[in-house]
Figure 1 (cartoon, rainbow, N blue to C red):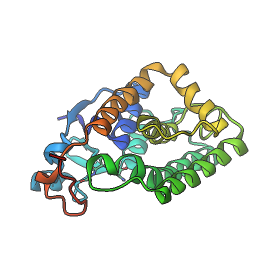
Figure 2: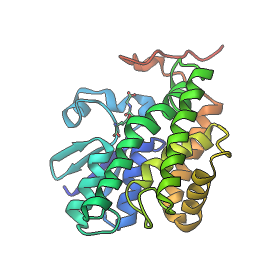
Figure 3: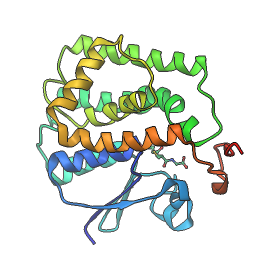
Figure 4: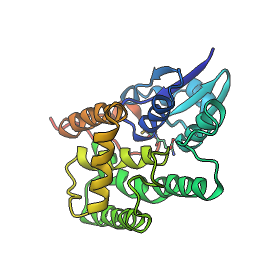
Length: 233
Ligand SMILES: N[C@@H](CCC(=O)N[C@@H](CS)C(=O)NCC(=O)O)C(=O)O
């Protein structure tokens, strides 16, 4: 009963949802899903989320997946009117835009370079890095044009969390993004001004760094999409 978040401890979408709970001070039960054991690939898990992805929210039997939908729902249901998800149409539109920008462009181009090669048989290619920089350029442009200290305005909003966690994966695997002044300023401000929220990302980053240095053999998952990388003997 109550509010449960099925979450993976190093997954950027899961970390973003946890940051919303923490920022709003909404109590919930954290259910740790072990990705490397394929706990998200079972038939039972598919009853909660047919996409077999983590995170999933269970609000007393109301199941919701997709981290963006989860973040929006937590705000709307548990802290309506919070500055974290403003109700003014333009302010909210900017938040929604940044959330979708992360989903479709920033994370979509960064994660295949940073995260996927850790867990599966993908390479970090120059082409992949080009895509990362294309996404960074666009994000830098948004921050420059808006000229605010947060991603969607002068205050922290739910848009910052997924963007922070995408950027964290770049730091975790050592991609140099130092030339993007606005991104660095925004990222460092978040770390400095929201240490408790940053700790959620930092703990995830520790795990990503560990797995990047010690890539796991996930061939036992028989993943339907991702090619397994066998451990070198
Ligand atoms: N669009 C989804 C993406 C969630 C996602 O990709 N989660 C990863 C873990 S970080 C996952 O569950 N992947 C399943 C798999 O690769 O088998 C969201 O934002 O919630």
